[in-house]
Length: 129
Image (cartoon, rainbow, N blue to C red; front, side):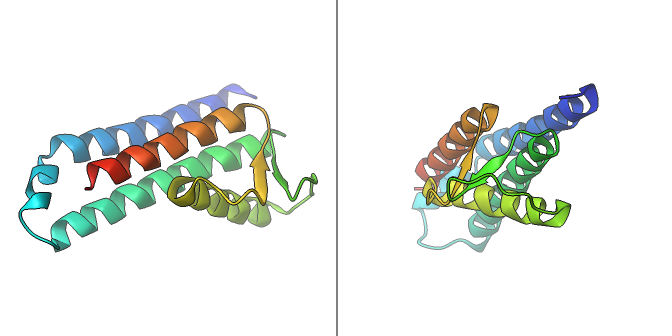
């Protein structure tokens, strides 16, 4: 991978990390037990999840542009740039929200990144209770 790809991925990781830390430190989690539904907390969780999904989707997309691919149904497939972006967003959302279906599988360093994303999703679910 070239230097620009590493810089972009590093920036995405920093943005996602800062967003999560800001959410946790904001103190909004302590108010969750006081009421059954809070529009503010719902909105905050929604924004955090979207940031993580799109942040990791961009990482997967950058990796796919550098020949580190997501394998679909056990086969390497040639897809367009738009198709690769769509696959990256889908894989990121599924990984964060369900730990994956197995229809798309990362190769190489993508496996470690998917594991980190799944862990972030699990931690966010624990913190929201």
